[in-house]
Every structure is written in structure tokens, then in C-alpha cells.
Length: 100
Image 1 (cartoon, rainbow, N blue to C red):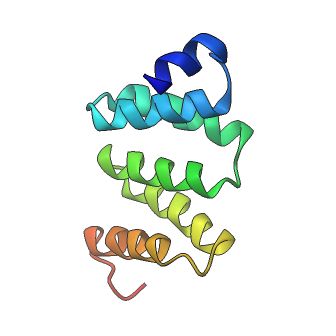
Image 2 (tube, one colour):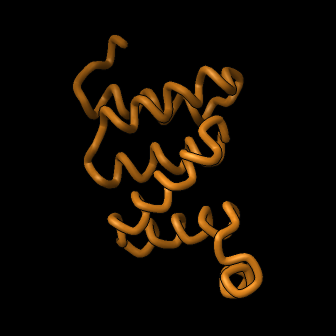
């Protein structure tokens, strides 16, 4: 797989970590997904892809305040990105704050 190849060639590269985090989230390894997204946020704090993933992982981990912070920053960085606004709206609905 592409991930296995990246792990072999560039085990510590952010792209590798990103794909590892996505896979961890998709397979229910929330602890692994959180660890990897936090590592990514340290090196790529303004990456829209990383912020979207971090917000999604936070929602899966039942941490809506953390998700709000990530999706809020994503909306600030990419105001025209409709998906970011939709994700933020989902957070507000989940936390019973639809007026935000």
C-alpha cells in the first residue's frame, strides 16, 4: 500500500503521520489518531488538512470543544471552504449552541 511504502521510505515525514492518523481514526484507534494529529499540529499548525483531521478526530473522541477550536481555526484560514463551516455548524448543533 501507499502508506506502507511511505512508512518504509519516510517514517517520520508529516505526510506519513497524516495518513497514519487518518487510518487510525477510520479503524477506531482514537488514541493513535489523537497522538498523531497532535504531533502534526506541532509541525503544521496552519495546515487546513491537518486542522480538518484534528477536528474530525476530536469529534470522534467526543471532545467538541477541541473540535470547535480546530474547525474555527480552519474557517479563519480558509473562509471560503464550505466544508469547514459545515463541520463547525455540526459542532455547534452537537453542543446545543445552534445560534453561534
